[in-house]
Length: 435
Image (cartoon, rainbow, N blue to C red; front, side, top):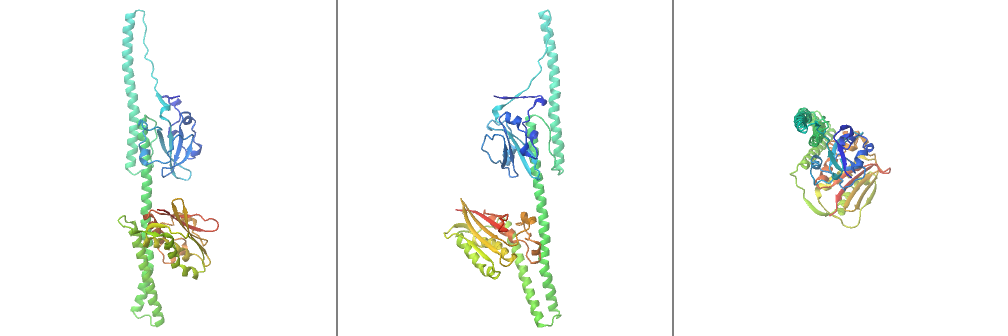
Protein backbone atom coordinates (compact mmCIF):
# COMPACT_ATOMS: atom_id res chain seq x y z
CA UNK A 1 0.00 0.00 0.00
CA UNK A 2 1.52 3.37 -1.08
CA UNK A 3 0.71 6.64 0.69
CA UNK A 4 -0.40 9.51 -1.56
CA UNK A 5 0.85 12.96 -0.55
CA UNK A 6 -1.50 15.74 -1.77
CA UNK A 7 0.01 19.14 -2.60
CA UNK A 8 -2.72 20.79 -0.52
CA UNK A 9 -1.01 22.04 2.66
CA UNK A 10 -4.13 21.39 4.75
CA UNK A 11 -4.02 17.70 3.89
CA UNK A 12 -0.23 17.37 4.03
CA UNK A 13 0.64 14.64 6.59
CA UNK A 14 3.02 15.64 9.41
CA UNK A 15 6.02 13.48 8.49
CA UNK A 16 8.81 16.10 8.36
CA UNK A 17 11.07 16.41 11.41
CA UNK A 18 10.27 20.13 11.65
CA UNK A 19 6.56 19.28 12.02
CA UNK A 20 6.91 16.94 14.98
CA UNK A 21 10.09 18.02 16.81
CA UNK A 22 9.74 19.17 20.43
CA UNK A 23 11.98 19.45 23.50
CA UNK A 24 10.09 16.70 25.37
CA UNK A 25 10.78 14.31 22.51
CA UNK A 26 9.17 11.35 24.26
CA UNK A 27 5.78 12.99 23.55
CA UNK A 28 6.29 13.45 19.78
CA UNK A 29 3.11 12.69 17.76
CA UNK A 30 4.02 10.02 15.17
CA UNK A 31 0.49 9.21 13.98
CA UNK A 32 1.15 10.27 10.35
CA UNK A 33 4.70 8.92 10.45
CA UNK A 34 3.57 5.52 11.74
CA UNK A 35 0.83 5.39 9.06
CA UNK A 36 3.50 5.17 6.34
CA UNK A 37 5.64 2.68 8.26
CA UNK A 38 8.09 5.28 9.58
CA UNK A 39 9.59 6.02 13.01
CA UNK A 40 11.42 8.75 14.94
CA UNK A 41 14.99 8.59 16.26
CA UNK A 42 16.59 11.05 18.73
CA UNK A 43 20.38 11.51 18.47
CA UNK A 44 22.56 12.89 21.29
CA UNK A 45 25.41 15.40 20.88
CA UNK A 46 27.71 12.62 19.59
CA UNK A 47 25.12 11.56 16.95
CA UNK A 48 24.27 8.30 18.76
CA UNK A 49 20.67 6.99 18.86
CA UNK A 50 19.38 7.42 22.42
CA UNK A 51 15.62 7.16 21.87
CA UNK A 52 13.30 5.58 19.29
CA UNK A 53 9.57 6.14 18.90
CA UNK A 54 7.74 3.76 16.60
CA UNK A 55 8.91 0.46 15.13
CA UNK A 56 12.58 0.75 14.08
CA UNK A 57 13.13 -1.13 10.84
CA UNK A 58 16.89 -0.86 10.56
CA UNK A 59 19.82 -1.56 12.89
CA UNK A 60 21.68 1.76 12.64
CA UNK A 61 22.66 3.12 16.11
CA UNK A 62 24.91 6.08 15.22
CA UNK A 63 25.54 8.50 12.37
CA UNK A 64 28.44 10.48 11.02
CA UNK A 65 28.14 14.19 10.35
CA UNK A 66 28.49 13.47 6.62
CA UNK A 67 25.49 11.12 6.73
CA UNK A 68 23.39 13.73 8.51
CA UNK A 69 24.32 16.44 5.99
CA UNK A 70 24.07 14.32 2.82
CA UNK A 71 20.77 12.54 3.40
CA UNK A 72 18.87 13.55 0.24
CA UNK A 73 16.26 10.90 -0.34
CA UNK A 74 16.66 11.04 -4.16
CA UNK A 75 19.57 8.65 -3.67
CA UNK A 76 17.88 5.34 -4.51
CA UNK A 77 20.55 3.40 -2.61
CA UNK A 78 19.12 4.67 0.70
CA UNK A 79 16.43 2.23 1.84
CA UNK A 80 15.14 4.48 4.61
CA UNK A 81 15.49 8.21 3.77
CA UNK A 82 14.98 10.69 6.60
CA UNK A 83 14.25 14.28 7.56
CA UNK A 84 16.36 16.00 10.26
CA UNK A 85 15.79 18.84 12.70
CA UNK A 86 17.85 19.99 15.69
CA UNK A 87 16.18 20.42 19.07
CA UNK A 88 17.01 21.81 22.51
CA UNK A 89 16.20 19.52 25.43
CA UNK A 90 14.86 20.80 28.74
CA UNK A 91 18.41 20.46 30.11
CA UNK A 92 19.71 22.78 27.33
CA UNK A 93 21.46 20.05 25.35
CA UNK A 94 21.42 20.06 21.52
CA UNK A 95 20.01 16.84 20.09
CA UNK A 96 18.79 15.87 16.57
CA UNK A 97 15.41 14.49 15.58
CA UNK A 98 15.35 12.08 12.60
CA UNK A 99 12.12 11.01 10.91
CA UNK A 100 12.85 7.86 8.90
CA UNK A 101 10.41 6.32 6.41
CA UNK A 102 10.48 3.50 3.86
CA UNK A 103 11.14 4.78 0.36
CA UNK A 104 8.51 2.56 -1.24
CA UNK A 105 5.65 4.04 0.88
CA UNK A 106 5.79 7.65 -0.44
CA UNK A 107 4.16 8.79 -3.69
CA UNK A 108 3.78 12.48 -4.54
CA UNK A 109 0.63 13.30 -6.50
CA UNK A 110 0.04 16.85 -7.81
CA UNK A 111 -3.50 17.45 -9.04
CA UNK A 112 -3.88 19.94 -11.90
CA UNK A 113 -7.15 21.46 -12.94
CA UNK A 114 -8.56 20.03 -16.12
CA UNK A 115 -8.49 22.40 -19.01
CA UNK A 116 -12.13 23.30 -19.85
CA UNK A 117 -13.33 23.35 -23.45
CA UNK A 118 -16.53 24.48 -25.15
CA UNK A 119 -18.83 22.43 -27.27
CA UNK A 120 -20.71 24.13 -30.08
CA UNK A 121 -23.47 22.96 -32.22
CA UNK A 122 -21.27 22.90 -35.24
CA UNK A 123 -18.38 20.52 -35.02
CA UNK A 124 -16.06 22.75 -37.02
CA UNK A 125 -16.78 25.85 -34.89
CA UNK A 126 -16.53 23.75 -31.78
CA UNK A 127 -13.08 22.56 -32.78
CA UNK A 128 -11.88 26.08 -33.61
CA UNK A 129 -13.29 27.52 -30.42
CA UNK A 130 -11.93 24.61 -28.46
CA UNK A 131 -8.44 25.11 -29.86
CA UNK A 132 -8.63 28.86 -29.26
CA UNK A 133 -9.79 28.45 -25.71
CA UNK A 134 -7.16 25.77 -25.14
CA UNK A 135 -4.40 28.05 -26.39
CA UNK A 136 -5.55 30.96 -24.21
CA UNK A 137 -5.84 28.76 -21.15
CA UNK A 138 -2.51 27.13 -21.92
CA UNK A 139 -0.76 30.51 -22.18
CA UNK A 140 -2.47 31.81 -19.03
CA UNK A 141 -1.59 28.58 -17.24
CA UNK A 142 2.06 28.88 -18.27
CA UNK A 143 2.19 32.51 -17.06
CA UNK A 144 0.52 31.70 -13.76
CA UNK A 145 2.69 28.64 -13.29
CA UNK A 146 5.83 30.69 -14.04
CA UNK A 147 4.81 33.33 -11.48
CA UNK A 148 3.98 30.64 -8.91
CA UNK A 149 7.24 28.81 -9.58
CA UNK A 150 9.27 32.02 -9.36
CA UNK A 151 7.70 32.80 -5.97
CA UNK A 152 8.32 29.25 -4.76
CA UNK A 153 11.99 29.60 -5.73
CA UNK A 154 12.61 33.24 -4.89
CA UNK A 155 11.08 33.15 -1.42
CA UNK A 156 13.36 30.37 -0.05
CA UNK A 157 16.38 31.86 -1.84
CA UNK A 158 15.75 35.29 -0.32
CA UNK A 159 15.43 33.77 3.15
CA UNK A 160 18.59 31.71 2.68
CA UNK A 161 20.54 34.75 1.42
CA UNK A 162 19.28 36.91 4.31
CA UNK A 163 20.17 34.37 6.99
CA UNK A 164 23.56 33.61 5.43
CA UNK A 165 24.40 37.33 5.65
CA UNK A 166 23.61 37.22 9.37
CA UNK A 167 25.76 34.13 9.80
CA UNK A 168 28.69 35.83 8.05
CA UNK A 169 28.40 38.61 10.66
CA UNK A 170 28.82 36.00 13.41
CA UNK A 171 25.21 35.31 14.39
CA UNK A 172 25.04 31.52 14.74
CA UNK A 173 21.67 31.45 16.53
CA UNK A 174 19.68 31.87 13.32
CA UNK A 175 17.70 28.96 11.84
CA UNK A 176 15.85 28.65 8.55
CA UNK A 177 12.11 27.98 8.88
CA UNK A 178 10.14 27.52 5.65
CA UNK A 179 8.25 24.93 3.64
CA UNK A 180 9.40 24.40 0.05
CA UNK A 181 10.39 21.82 -2.52
CA UNK A 182 12.46 18.86 -1.46
CA UNK A 183 15.73 20.38 -2.72
CA UNK A 184 15.19 23.55 -0.67
CA UNK A 185 14.21 21.47 2.36
CA UNK A 186 17.56 19.69 2.03
CA UNK A 187 19.37 23.03 1.84
CA UNK A 188 17.38 24.29 4.86
CA UNK A 189 18.24 21.25 6.97
CA UNK A 190 21.89 21.40 5.93
CA UNK A 191 22.06 25.12 6.73
CA UNK A 192 20.53 24.58 10.18
CA UNK A 193 22.86 21.66 10.85
CA UNK A 194 25.87 23.78 9.84
CA UNK A 195 24.67 26.70 11.99
CA UNK A 196 24.32 24.42 15.01
CA UNK A 197 27.83 23.02 14.52
CA UNK A 198 29.31 26.51 14.07
CA UNK A 199 27.59 27.68 17.25
CA UNK A 200 28.97 24.69 19.16
CA UNK A 201 32.46 25.33 17.74
CA UNK A 202 32.25 29.01 18.68
CA UNK A 203 31.23 28.16 22.24
CA UNK A 204 34.07 25.65 22.55
CA UNK A 205 36.51 28.25 21.19
CA UNK A 206 35.26 30.77 23.76
CA UNK A 207 35.69 28.23 26.57
CA UNK A 208 39.25 27.49 25.39
CA UNK A 209 40.10 31.20 25.39
CA UNK A 210 38.64 31.58 28.88
CA UNK A 211 40.61 28.53 30.00
CA UNK A 212 43.84 30.00 28.60
CA UNK A 213 43.21 33.30 30.40
CA UNK A 214 42.47 31.51 33.66
CA UNK A 215 45.56 29.34 33.16
CA UNK A 216 47.84 32.37 32.80
CA UNK A 217 46.32 34.07 35.85
CA UNK A 218 46.64 30.95 38.00
CA UNK A 219 50.15 30.28 36.73
CA UNK A 220 51.33 33.80 37.50
CA UNK A 221 49.80 33.61 40.99
CA UNK A 222 51.23 30.18 41.83
CA UNK A 223 54.74 31.07 40.70
CA UNK A 224 54.70 34.63 42.03
CA UNK A 225 53.98 33.59 45.63
CA UNK A 226 57.14 31.47 46.25
CA UNK A 227 59.30 33.86 44.20
CA UNK A 228 58.15 36.78 46.36
CA UNK A 229 59.19 34.84 49.46
CA UNK A 230 62.58 33.95 47.94
CA UNK A 231 63.16 37.60 46.99
CA UNK A 232 62.23 38.97 50.43
CA UNK A 233 64.30 36.43 52.39
CA UNK A 234 67.36 36.62 50.13
CA UNK A 235 67.32 40.43 50.24
CA UNK A 236 67.08 40.39 54.05
CA UNK A 237 70.06 38.05 54.22
CA UNK A 238 72.15 39.95 51.66
CA UNK A 239 71.60 43.29 53.44
CA UNK A 240 72.55 41.80 56.80
CA UNK A 241 69.16 42.50 58.38
CA UNK A 242 69.06 39.01 59.89
CA UNK A 243 71.80 38.54 62.50
CA UNK A 244 70.51 35.57 64.47
CA UNK A 245 72.19 32.39 63.14
CA UNK A 246 69.17 30.15 63.81
CA UNK A 247 66.90 32.56 61.99
CA UNK A 248 69.35 32.70 59.10
CA UNK A 249 69.24 28.93 58.81
CA UNK A 250 65.44 29.04 58.75
CA UNK A 251 65.58 31.64 55.99
CA UNK A 252 68.03 29.53 53.97
CA UNK A 253 65.82 26.45 54.34
CA UNK A 254 62.74 28.42 53.30
CA UNK A 255 64.53 29.80 50.24
CA UNK A 256 65.66 26.29 49.30
CA UNK A 257 62.17 24.86 49.83
CA UNK A 258 60.47 27.61 47.80
CA UNK A 259 63.05 27.22 45.02
CA UNK A 260 62.31 23.51 44.85
CA UNK A 261 58.58 24.29 44.67
CA UNK A 262 59.09 26.74 41.77
CA UNK A 263 61.14 24.08 40.00
CA UNK A 264 58.32 21.55 40.52
CA UNK A 265 55.74 24.00 39.16
CA UNK A 266 57.82 24.68 36.05
CA UNK A 267 58.38 20.94 35.55
CA UNK A 268 54.63 20.28 35.82
CA UNK A 269 53.84 23.04 33.36
CA UNK A 270 56.51 21.79 30.95
CA UNK A 271 55.14 18.24 31.21
CA UNK A 272 51.58 19.46 30.56
CA UNK A 273 52.60 21.50 27.49
CA UNK A 274 54.77 18.63 26.22
CA UNK A 275 51.83 16.19 26.39
CA UNK A 276 49.69 18.68 24.45
CA UNK A 277 52.10 18.47 21.52
CA UNK A 278 51.21 15.89 18.86
CA UNK A 279 54.91 15.56 18.02
CA UNK A 280 55.71 14.10 21.44
CA UNK A 281 56.37 10.36 21.08
CA UNK A 282 55.72 7.80 23.78
CA UNK A 283 58.32 5.17 24.67
CA UNK A 284 56.00 2.15 24.90
CA UNK A 285 57.04 -1.33 26.05
CA UNK A 286 55.19 -4.52 26.97
CA UNK A 287 55.19 -4.54 30.78
CA UNK A 288 53.48 -6.65 33.45
CA UNK A 289 50.90 -4.12 34.67
CA UNK A 290 50.19 -6.03 37.90
CA UNK A 291 53.84 -5.95 39.02
CA UNK A 292 54.06 -2.32 37.88
CA UNK A 293 51.18 -1.36 40.23
CA UNK A 294 52.75 -3.33 43.11
CA UNK A 295 55.95 -1.27 42.79
CA UNK A 296 54.07 2.04 42.80
CA UNK A 297 52.10 1.03 45.91
CA UNK A 298 55.35 0.03 47.64
CA UNK A 299 56.79 3.51 46.99
CA UNK A 300 53.94 5.10 48.94
CA UNK A 301 53.68 2.48 51.69
CA UNK A 302 55.61 4.52 54.27
CA UNK A 303 53.49 7.64 53.67
CA UNK A 304 50.27 5.63 53.98
CA UNK A 305 51.51 3.95 57.15
CA UNK A 306 52.52 7.32 58.62
CA UNK A 307 48.92 8.61 58.15
CA UNK A 308 47.52 5.33 59.50
CA UNK A 309 45.73 4.54 56.20
CA UNK A 310 43.76 1.30 55.93
CA UNK A 311 45.02 -0.19 52.66
CA UNK A 312 42.82 -2.57 50.65
CA UNK A 313 44.86 -4.03 47.77
CA UNK A 314 42.97 -6.25 45.32
CA UNK A 315 45.18 -7.24 42.43
CA UNK A 316 45.44 -10.62 40.67
CA UNK A 317 48.37 -12.99 41.10
CA UNK A 318 48.74 -13.64 37.38
CA UNK A 319 50.72 -11.48 34.96
CA UNK A 320 48.83 -9.04 32.71
CA UNK A 321 50.97 -7.45 30.01
CA UNK A 322 50.10 -4.04 28.55
CA UNK A 323 51.99 -1.72 26.22
CA UNK A 324 52.69 1.69 27.79
CA UNK A 325 55.34 4.30 28.57
CA UNK A 326 56.50 3.20 32.03
CA UNK A 327 57.82 6.61 33.15
CA UNK A 328 54.73 8.57 32.12
CA UNK A 329 52.28 5.96 33.41
CA UNK A 330 54.04 5.87 36.79
CA UNK A 331 53.63 9.63 37.03
CA UNK A 332 49.94 9.53 36.10
CA UNK A 333 49.00 6.83 38.64
CA UNK A 334 51.29 8.28 41.30
CA UNK A 335 49.53 11.66 40.97
CA UNK A 336 46.21 10.03 41.89
CA UNK A 337 47.57 8.01 44.80
CA UNK A 338 49.60 10.97 46.11
CA UNK A 339 46.48 13.19 46.06
CA UNK A 340 44.53 10.56 48.02
CA UNK A 341 47.24 10.47 50.69
CA UNK A 342 47.86 14.21 50.81
CA UNK A 343 44.29 15.51 50.96
CA UNK A 344 42.58 12.88 53.15
CA UNK A 345 42.67 12.66 56.97
CA UNK A 346 44.38 9.97 59.01
CA UNK A 347 42.65 6.59 59.11
CA UNK A 348 41.24 6.89 55.58
CA UNK A 349 40.57 3.59 53.79
CA UNK A 350 42.28 3.43 50.39
CA UNK A 351 41.31 0.72 47.88
CA UNK A 352 43.46 -0.10 44.84
CA UNK A 353 41.96 -2.81 42.62
CA UNK A 354 42.59 -4.31 39.17
CA UNK A 355 39.54 -5.75 37.41
CA UNK A 356 39.12 -7.64 34.13
CA UNK A 357 35.85 -7.22 32.24
CA UNK A 358 35.60 -8.72 28.76
CA UNK A 359 38.47 -7.11 26.81
CA UNK A 360 38.94 -4.22 29.25
CA UNK A 361 41.34 -3.88 32.17
CA UNK A 362 40.13 -1.49 34.90
CA UNK A 363 42.30 0.04 37.61
CA UNK A 364 40.26 1.57 40.43
CA UNK A 365 41.74 3.90 43.06
CA UNK A 366 39.08 4.75 45.65
CA UNK A 367 38.88 6.14 49.18
CA UNK A 368 36.31 7.02 51.83
CA UNK A 369 37.95 10.35 52.63
CA UNK A 370 36.71 13.92 52.22
CA UNK A 371 35.60 13.45 48.60
CA UNK A 372 35.45 16.04 45.83
CA UNK A 373 32.79 18.77 45.84
CA UNK A 374 29.98 18.43 43.29
CA UNK A 375 30.58 21.84 41.71
CA UNK A 376 34.00 20.87 40.31
CA UNK A 377 33.52 17.17 39.52
CA UNK A 378 32.77 18.01 35.88
CA UNK A 379 36.05 19.94 35.49
CA UNK A 380 38.33 18.07 37.91
CA UNK A 381 40.62 17.00 35.03
CA UNK A 382 41.00 20.56 33.70
CA UNK A 383 44.28 22.37 34.22
CA UNK A 384 44.60 24.52 37.37
CA UNK A 385 41.56 23.00 39.08
CA UNK A 386 42.00 21.97 42.72
CA UNK A 387 39.86 19.50 44.57
CA UNK A 388 38.65 22.06 47.13
CA UNK A 389 39.26 25.61 48.25
CA UNK A 390 41.59 24.53 51.03
CA UNK A 391 44.09 23.23 48.54
CA UNK A 392 44.71 26.63 46.96
CA UNK A 393 47.25 27.56 49.59
CA UNK A 394 49.29 24.39 49.50
CA UNK A 395 51.51 25.48 46.62
CA UNK A 396 49.86 23.04 44.21
CA UNK A 397 49.07 24.31 40.74
CA UNK A 398 46.18 21.95 39.96
CA UNK A 399 48.00 20.19 37.13
CA UNK A 400 48.33 16.71 38.65
CA UNK A 401 45.04 15.24 37.41
CA UNK A 402 45.22 17.21 34.14
CA UNK A 403 48.64 15.67 33.42
CA UNK A 404 47.35 12.21 34.42
CA UNK A 405 44.42 12.49 32.02
CA UNK A 406 46.69 13.64 29.17
CA UNK A 407 48.98 10.65 29.76
CA UNK A 408 46.05 8.20 29.72
CA UNK A 409 44.62 9.80 26.58
CA UNK A 410 47.98 9.62 24.77
CA UNK A 411 47.95 5.88 25.51
CA UNK A 412 44.38 5.49 24.25
CA UNK A 413 43.17 4.85 27.82
CA UNK A 414 40.33 6.56 29.66
CA UNK A 415 39.91 7.90 33.19
CA UNK A 416 36.61 8.65 34.91
CA UNK A 417 35.61 10.06 38.28
CA UNK A 418 32.67 7.90 39.39
CA UNK A 419 29.93 8.81 41.81
CA UNK A 420 30.31 7.65 45.40
CA UNK A 421 28.81 4.27 46.21
CA UNK A 422 27.78 5.15 49.76
CA UNK A 423 30.94 3.65 51.22
CA UNK A 424 33.64 5.36 49.13
CA UNK A 425 33.42 9.07 48.36
CA UNK A 426 36.00 9.21 45.58
CA UNK A 427 36.46 6.53 42.89
CA UNK A 428 38.89 7.01 39.98
CA UNK A 429 38.49 4.34 37.26
CA UNK A 430 41.15 3.90 34.55
CA UNK A 431 40.18 1.84 31.51
CA UNK A 432 42.56 0.21 29.02
CA UNK A 433 42.27 -2.43 26.32
CA UNK A 434 43.87 -5.82 26.99
CA UNK A 435 46.17 -7.12 24.29
